[in-house]
Length: 342
Image (tube, rainbow, N blue to C red; front, top):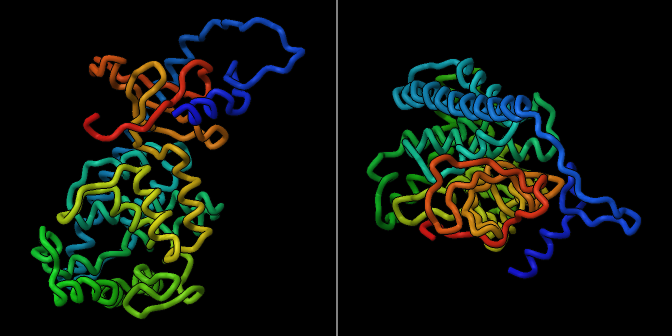
């Protein structure tokens, strides 16, 4: 880790007395400024508020999607009003910070279909923000993402939750879910006709490796390409009946090494940039010996994220975790990524 340590120590000039190198003419001593306790308290309260809002936003999404999936399964009509409000909330939350993204890539997972829809939507919007999409495009991207796999609720649960390998017949049935979902949306939600077109393309891949039509390159809408990448990334981050979850940095590496020919360079590069060197949710060890989790990124200083310290140098859990912005700390930095259980 010597190379990483060296990079961290020399990374940029940090605001507020950071770790950047001084010029030869700067021989002033380090200054210790009084901290405004009121300002610190307001900041902590704001962080807590954003976290609560993200939790509420996520719960609202699950609540709105439950009747939508029920309507698709039973063939009853539904309105886009509820999920539109959800996507609007996602865009607002992600514009203010990454609390919602942290929740989407956490190890916890509820119902397979609903949480996949919610998490994929959050990740897709984050990619769209990295691509500088205007709000209108983020909303359309989010609406398509939140309904991208509705066809899965038409696949028998015993197949979706099967712990062992699927038979060829079962695999072919699952591969029909984009067509089933697109057809259902057109029948039960007239306003979702344009979404149905994207649902049909979300599992297509650039080189023609996808399904159901084997589309290639520019034949696949960019929204569908983004949603497909977000969906794949989300799947890697969570346990499936047939494998364990990947840690965030492992999922990024998996995409780069094994999936780089099936997704556009632009969208894949954007995903990597958005998730930085230490993606959100990555567990790390600091040079103090403490263990922490990355909870927010610093685009200007990718090696110095915001972390939540939860264990001391002896591996003992702290009574109260504390948040530390490494871009504002000249003495503390990440030394390594740690695996679950370490």
